[in-house]
Length: 168
Image 1: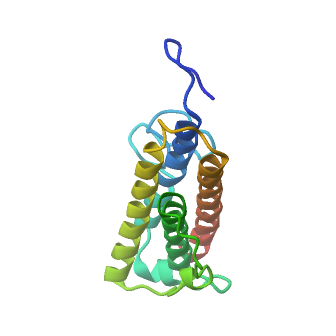
Image 2: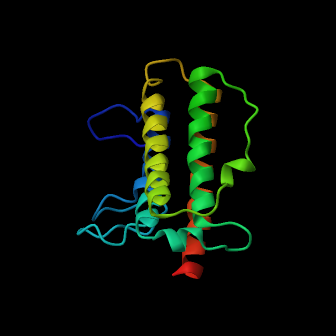
């Protein structure tokens, strides 16, 4: 946990959300980062999930790389964040179609824009829900779900960033 000089220790949920924000939104321009390459003060060099996806066109996003595509990876990442909210907020225990969540792997211009929007909305819904839990007793289910979600997003961000090298 981090502690501000004049304030209380950071809430564990906020700590997890800080790292999730870096994974999805990228680093704060001109500031240090926890694990991504830093974003320059002018905003260039953002290596977060959203900026990475924004830098690709539908052809690149649909390119098959070892049986999957960036679009498939992005779709699955959005689905996983959606499931965390459904699981924690709604008590929805599935079944969930994890294999199907990677499909379709091909997108056109409109579908690619919609998919990028879905990733953003899933992230925003997850963070908004998590913040509703700040005043509640801390549970391992909540922190475990968020930590697992963070690890999952970071994993797929890494996979996507490696795939970008092939499709660019």
